[in-house]
Image (cartoon, rainbow over all chains, first blue to last red; front, side, top):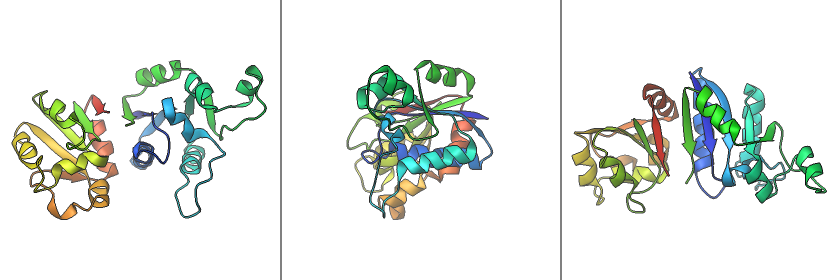
Length: 130
Length: 97
């Protein structure tokens, strides 16, 4: 079965992103497919490679990137939410005249249409927020 | 319909809202699991609802909140794999955020 996951909260404040990650792991362990993980609102903070939690704490961004790379997941960050919160890739840096980027690989920045498409293409869409 | 509730019944009315829908399946996660603690004000509500709703609760979140030894009878505990199964078994799901 094809799953899509929507994450709308940032790391370390709410449990939502932890629950979403554990759920995503369980989906893959069960042999299901994840069509896309979409990060919206404060959820875009899950995609900054500059995060540096204490060494004895979980690294939420690193955990997402490792899961995504190991399973070839499509990790999409909402462009409007990212612009507001300073999540930047090369394209956004040039387009908006910024001097740095901070998007972790393999996240990509795209539009809300990607969430709608996930809702249509996947058999199930599960929302994690607060 | 699978109703996913992540709010404590002592914080927000998500559980009450779901119970008003009449019937279905409920999965309590995160602070939502406080609803299944015996001795709480929500216990009678949960017991009364068990006739109309199947009520599941996420074991890791129950354990994290120290209420594993007093889960209301009739509530079914699941792990994350069980969470996935519930989503797969129900054609639709709603997270009550």
